[in-house]
Image 1 (tube, one colour):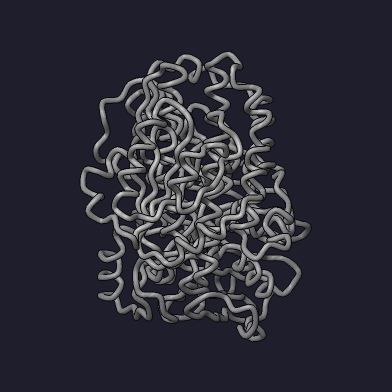
Image 2 (cartoon, helix red, strand yellow):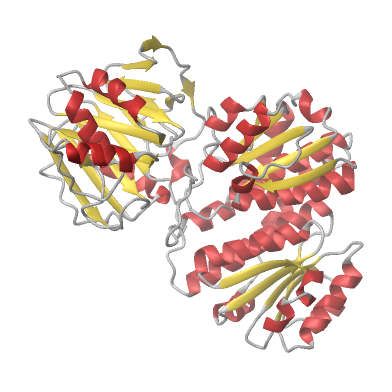
Length: 579
């Protein structure tokens, strides 16, 4: 979940690494730090976020450096627990993303052997273990230490007298960028795009040596070759482009994201395991889980294919009886729980499909087949355009199963998103920004839309929000309804419209402020609503997309009105690479 970045080349490295860490802060922002190798290893690190100005790097001289931006696991967020960490001699520095599960046992042994620790982190043991075996060859030292470590890691290591940066990964992502007489290593491609699009995605067990001129990769002590990929993303994709926040930019990217995803998917060969699926199990976390729930409703209603959706974090420990196709969804392709769930499905003999946003990510290596969602880089911690891109994949799969019956809807649905972006949500924002609790409700495929709307609201505004299937409100949550508790309801045309309207009237009778999303000519809803928001289109595809975008914007503008740090909400990180 943390972000690591390294550079070796002909320029002063600390400034390059600092800017790289800024682009990785969505992975964690409890603290940050840099180690640079000049005549010696110099370290600068600090609790909190990277300031725009005021962090002094002039003492961090050298043309090789590694850096870290932290999401705290072991040890509180403070200066001493910030990475990089050094050994007792100060000649070895390490940054690490992941969790070392046997660190307590290793630490006791190191303390007994006389090592002095200066932090509460699990990472520091790596530096001390390296100290014990380092004899002038950093690669050999890293290769000797890694078998002692249980858990997940992506690490970068510097040593005072060694000209290389050594990188290694196991169950945590790590990418190498190949520049012009420069090499980069990072948790993902985002900070490297400024310098090169030539990337190598390291595989589990890989250990890489980086010099300005070359990268050498080893697996179990033997030299191996990994494919170099040219990434289509550009550095412009990771800039705000005039928007106040990345989240708002990414929301406004969504019409193009949806259209691009649909066009790209039509050019890809659909894996046969999809067409042959008689039963589908989907595993995912967070926003991806909500997208999967929408897919379940559509698969069963439109295609008559039985489907179930499982939380990846539960699936590993409490797997249901498995049969048929198992689909894992992850924007990063590195979500730890989803990786483990798909690996379990594969071991049980089920065909597996990965739906991801990152070429070469770990999930694609585990699965039998994969589909890209084509969302481009997503910087804001709160997922928006990746959710819409996931829906594009699912709508495309439904369209294939329906022999192209949704093709017209898919070609025009981006217009519904564009119309949703133009709506005035001011009255709804005024209502929500005064609330301490908000309910989001819907029925059918709009129920997971409500779940996602509630998640967005709580993630970035810190207002307690819950999503419910509308009929369930009477089974307990009714006790919480009051004039101070708004309800946001999606009441789209269809089979459940009548009962949904009845549910809404029951809520209104309790004095609850109602923010209603419905067909623009629906006078009944307009009369009962305190705030009415018209859905631009009534067909299933456009309705799901426009309602989702409206709830994203409602959360965004509410959080903005409350002055929250929208792109980097407290305690959260973008890519959850640990359990």
